[in-house]
Amino acid sequence: MIDSPFRRISSAYGKNHYAVDFPFRTALKYFKFEGDLSSLGEFAGGELYDIADYIYRNAKPRQAYWSIDEKPKMAYTITMENLMVSRLSNAV
Image (cartoon, rainbow, N blue to C red; front, side, top):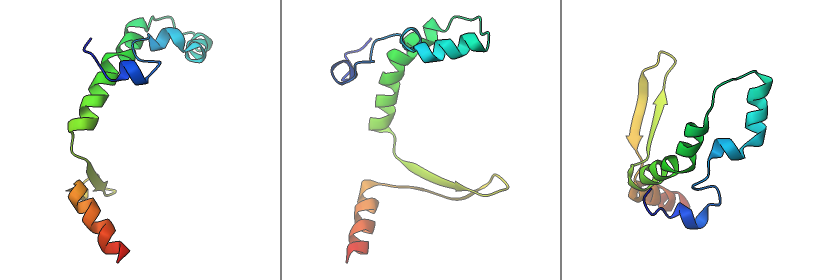
């Protein structure tokens, strides 16, 4: 694993989320789930944090509105500049 900032700020980073989530394992037993989700728990406790951090830092926010017939009515990218201008114009 890479040296992630989550190592210092999250007590759950690097842990197997399946192993530490007792209520989830109890629910799986109730529904008679027989599989082992340890590899998924390891992924969620490490690499998934890193992927989410990368996306959060590098992806541009986009908000899309969808109509009932599943076609986009309006889609645009919200940049920090546009957000600041709209907030400043509303404040005046």
